[in-house]
Amino acid sequence: MKGLSNVNRILTGLVGAVSEAWAQLRIGRLRVLLSLVGVAVAVAAMTFVIALGQVTVSAVNRLSESYTGRPGTVSIIVSPTGKGTDSSGDSDSSGSSSGSAPSGPGTSPGTSPGTSPDGPAGGTGGQAGSRPGLGAADVVRAQSSFVERYQVKAWATHYDQNLRVAFPSGGRTVHTQVVSLQYGILHHTDVAQGRWFSAEDADDLSPSIIVSQGFLEQLGLKRLTGPVQVRAYAPTPMTYTIVGVLKPEKRESCQTSGPDETPCAQPLMAMVLNTPYERMLPTNVERATPVLEIWAGQDGADQRVIELAKQDFNAAFGAGSTRAESNVDQGATTSSSSTFTKVVTIAGVCVMLMGVLGLVNISMVTVRQRIHEIGVRRAFGATSRRIFFSIMLESVVATVVAGVIGIGIAIVGMRLAPLETILRLPVPTRPPFPMSAALIGLAAATGVGALAGAVPALVAVRIRPIDAIRY
Image (cartoon, rainbow, N blue to C red):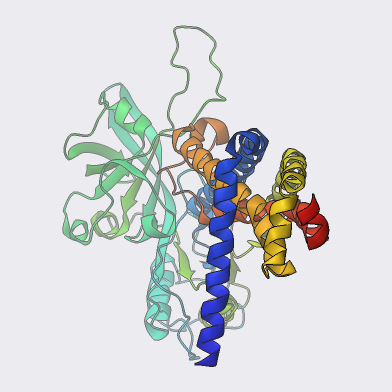
């Protein structure tokens, strides 16, 4: 009960001090208002820049993930060598060793259209290897066996393929990625029109395909109002059904030779679902070896996945046949973001300190005018601590109000600002205002207010009651 009474006394004193500070601000609001304009502007600028920096980091990370996958994705590329293995080995096995299942929630593999096939997460599209009797089909079976053995839930495959498509203007070769169903989840693939692949597409006799805006325009269409069929002649004659259109790319840097030409033509590319596509291919068509991607998360499980992959696939296809890499390398980005936030915060606090100088001067004048009042309060038992906090809280409350106004201005600015134009990066959806930026702005305003109010508060505490009453 005694502890509860002490808490109530402390809260009562704090509320009373804040109420008194607000009442004093209302009395001298005209004097305080101009000195707080600089604080509000500084908080608004600092909060806006911090929020913009965090949004920039998020946009850069999302763009990077569209190529390399979500952080913690392991890319496994198998090129059979046959070294150190039995030439008549079972191609259906991916190794005899066992282990715990690689951890990680759901993912999907692949790289966004245009990714280099030689990159750690790019399509290979090459020969399956030099070992006689082994090909892409054996690697696919080994990949499926690996996924089933370790009960991996977050995985997918992809590889590159060129399709010869019949457009109204003539046949053209289209760079295409043959991907599995979860590709779009792992790589944040944005479909501007139509939809992404679904499980029902696996049973279609006409393989589902998602095309770029440039592909759609080559067909003489601007928008996809429903499923559209297109004919391809290579690698085998086949009819595809367009179910979605990728988000158009920003191509502001391209140049044209004449004013009448199209300023920035969209790339010609496509993505096709692997299951119906591969089922329709004749047996004599050479197939590319797919890349297996597994999302292991960022808790260190990616290294365990790499070890298991090399162990199993090297045992099945020969020493040195497996290349497994993780895309977990976020330290530099996180460090840069943290440094940027610190620099902007320090700069904003310095600007606010300059604006608070006016508030300090006004507070000193106010204390001098209230000497008699302070003496009477001391004579009636007001403690030095109560006097100190009541004077200091006047500055704190004033700067907090200015900080809230500045944060509101920053939020409105982030809502109205053309982010894609400012950042020159794709921003699929306008992100919510970062709460950390608002908290930093509010904390900075509070700290600067406390610092500005400490000086006049110390002056008030040193006033002797008898001298103040005589004043």
